[in-house]
Image (cartoon, rainbow, N blue to C red; front, side):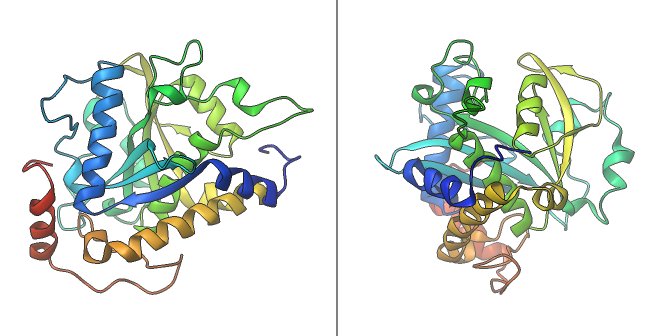
Length: 290
């Protein structure tokens, strides 16, 4: 299990020292998310073309929940990610992984684990700014976890930034009712995610997508139930940060007709909000096709 020599207190306090997370639900916060993605995906890595508005977004962002990781010291946005949802009113909508891996994935493995397609989501667009991934061999990856991140048996440490990103997505999945998460990942990253207690199940043959990537899934509740005490404490801390942000976002927290649970896991639901209200808020802040 993940770093058993660390206690729940040291895990949580270590994270607090360096980072904080916020759900990017309002128009302004999502724009900051798109700007960070542009910096990493377009300018630093060249995965996407540079855009004159310095915003990187696509057609899936309109039905995504985004999160930002900030430096506690500077307040700078240093990492981001998104959870792409399936609208329960449009369940036939495909996720990017389902499109890219159409010829290789075993859809029956996914379908057997959920009651309806709206309980499936996809982890996507994970990014960390270049100054936080300058180690040799990592400059060409949007996010990574190396052996060095875990320290040694005598002096263990936690890869807090990667933890913040992945635990945020798992927490948001729980809040928005996603039971299964799809992810396209490198083999090495999958191995190191397992060291964090995030075990992936391969659901198809690897494909060539910015290198060799493996289509996989993770079961949200299984990951949460399997967390060690230190990791669980950190997960709940991050979850409460996200819940405060969800409460502050109000109507903007409703995404793709998914209503989050509320200000704390398993508690009050936010009031129902019409598509018209959310669409009006989006159009006031976002690019027209985001």
